[in-house]
Image 1 (cartoon, rainbow, N blue to C red):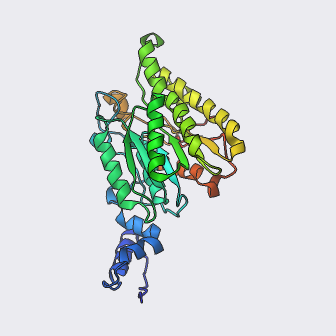
Image 2 (spheres, rainbow, N blue to C red; image 1 turned 135 degrees about the vertical axis):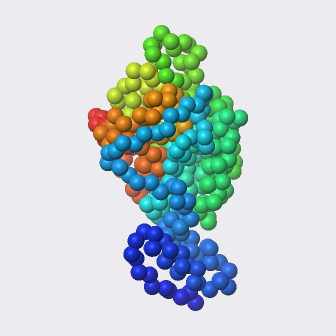
Image 3 (cartoon, rainbow, N blue to C red; image 1 turned 90 degrees about the vertical axis):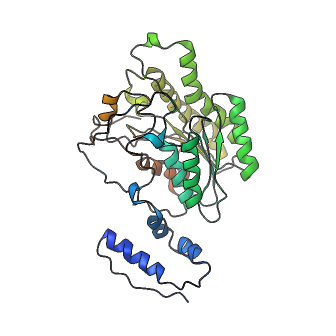
Length: 351
């Protein structure tokens, strides 16, 4: 019989030590102790397992500055960023919102994609994600190991799939691989993106324009149309757009154009398939600390990144991921479709 040890909560650190001590005092002969901990106390178990480096203090405003840094090409690499983006908050308490679901996240190796994958896994989903081969291999493997470590007991092993999603045939191969492994797809997160800074529309040639549009919006069409063949009533599509779709950005003209297209795509597709019981929504993040930032901007811009929003700081991927969990969970958002959430640090938008 398991012995209940009373705990006296004094502070966060002392509470953590007390909970750990209580678990440690359980009989060592219990062969399923780890499973018991994880199934009976999921929120406590996850909190105890998370590295302390993932803990951060939310600021309403402040003098946050990032160290000067620049990455020479895209896609950016998360593992060389300083500081590392935070894909999880120690305050997050999972509650099996996505238990038994199968989720596919494009661009899930780093940044917002990694945070979404991890949050989905904590909520019980089986997760597959895509990444760019030979350029994002380390970030993808890091994410894969993170997901394997904390996946739910009844979830299948996560999967990392290399792919250039700008082309229809590649998107179909990704979807087929996920369906062959897991049998279906319940949640699609279209998240892959790239951006390049330019001073004038005259600098954007046909090749670069097509490249950005292929990754940022063509892939959303391709992935959605192939996934829908395997989705049933209650499934969900979530598209990552941007605050720039609502306020514009003078040096990210092609990127901003694709993000505006994603908003329109989200609204139209939601209306098209609402009769099937499948919801389509979007998330429009503001300035979030992801590999896209040092790979797109100069050192001075990186240092001051995010300071112009009302909260006075950049957001972390972990502050965006719960939006995706909310929209993916039918219990939370069953009456929401064709809408966009705005985790943007206080920037007021209409729409």
